[in-house]
Length: 401
Image (cartoon, rainbow, N blue to C red; front, top):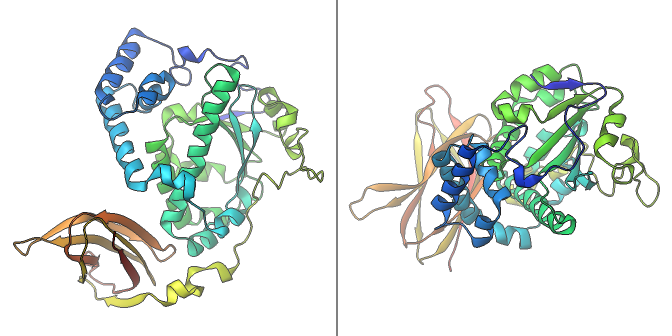
């Protein structure tokens, strides 16, 4: 299961020689060195010069795929396509996350550990995941996490330059005080798993250590539900600390970098030991933030799909390189969604693959660049449901270049 300790964590506090870093508890072998050379050779046509020069960066992809080079190359290529699709560089410069995420998504960076890695504190117990999902679009959660991880990567590079040695990963302190049965709300857990998979696929080996503190009695249940996310190597990085967690944290983190409420010396300028200027503590999201109470929701078009039915929404795109964006949700249950283009022979070509989503607790949104003018269709698919009809609310926009 996970590792449990009440005083000391196995390992060393000495700064590792990261030129020899080959993953948690792993060592350099001739086979791994050859895999690194082969990986660089395989990605040279679509990687940047900076990426190819950074051995630690390249090792992340190999470690995530157990040094299986073809799998690591596929993972890297898919991630580069994901970056292009999400326009990650533009996101980092221009994206402003919804205020409700800023105010109610728990977590924040507080400093650096003794090895130079950033420290993120996540007070999970006061997370109102249902309120957040009812108040935000799916894509905003994804974009917000991308920007967070890009900032972490930037900090890693900055600390590597400052300390004149490689810095690897992030230390996370996961505070589970106040975690209760509301945490077991399945749509929220499923969506957190979805987000975590996206991050694991595009930011591999970013977690150096995860300290769990104030663990509740239902931790084994939560751990079982999170099993799909937890690889064998990740298990070795998870430490469940007991009542004397402050002592263990201070073995890895200087007091000046650790919030006072966790046993350190760091406070806000006004003396607040919880460092609320750095850490968001979550809380209940007011219903006034729910999307169903906004003008955007009221302007959606409503349709009903009978059991076993598909509906196609036809529209025209007049200009090449136009932007198509959409959002939708149901009153209850899930729905399938895809986008088609009508070809010359009147057949429909799928350009956004059908995805069946639980979208009654979360507004699903998306955006693509459409290269060719023509006739297009949004498709809402209830063909898999033989007994249940669905009410769908949707809107779309076409922005010409």
